Image (tube, rainbow, N blue to C red; front, top):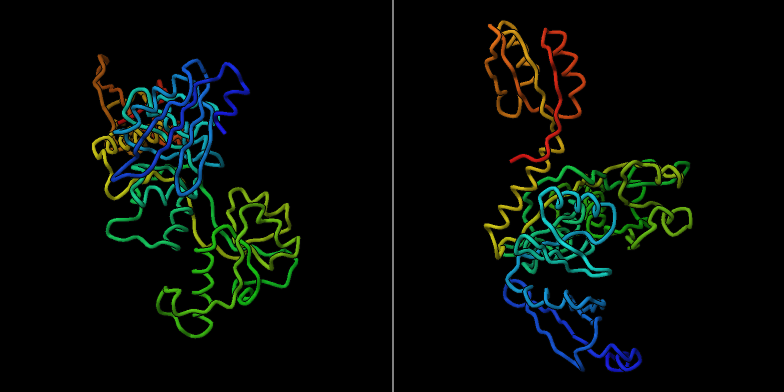
Length: 374
């Protein structure tokens, strides 16, 4: 097929097939030249879990492919609600990369790292199996993966850092004007969800409780009466279309749920974005460095630096208002009995803290943005 396409395009006579395959820890690489060397466009095939993704690459990306081996592999959501916030975190950590159009692998320019753009639901699998060293995904996806594939001594993802974005809840929802008022009312009925593992575990527990068996969390001893159906998207429409009596779906603001005439009657799990790593990463030192940088970015996003002057007699009162992360920095001023104080304060509290500082006698109160922290 590549050869036919090459002849049809005339000038495009240089084609490369790039196949990435698992080996040991990481990725193996083979590049094969087919045809003449004149082309500017190549075809790359990345094989993983039996699925081929085909892209067109610029010639300079081919040179990048040759150095993929030996890099730390870092999985990032390729789309969806977590992607932009994840990219912002990477930018704050000075992880520089250029992602080609429709390309799901990007090499980091200033570190031996390759970013792999994957569906958020697949990231726990790749990290848990040790094919990828680091990943950013939601706790909901990790819990779903664990429900289907429990961790072992060597497999499973390890949570490194709470990234403090992507907050949501996985909730049981029913029609607001329907006949179901509690989760137990749904036992034996049709439930649609994208989270089959968590939903089966949830209703298995409910059915055990109904039978008077409170112990255990094992699916093996439960024959579910509740019918769990998988939907890959538009789960919130299932009740209106008569496919389901209730659904289990993610809720962020709740606006979509209300628009569909649904109401939440229970929470299966709460979730936010997290940084995860494999149990046996190939570059532990680099993993620690990346985690440290991201931790600094999060601190910078969460805090501001508050600076003010205060009389020494009022210092104890002022520092109780702004204790800082560890302790405030106090510097003596040339003016007798006055000191300057610097302290990190959470952004969400800064307006209130400024009011309290002014009330206690502090002056020259400044708030400075923190670009990064470590």
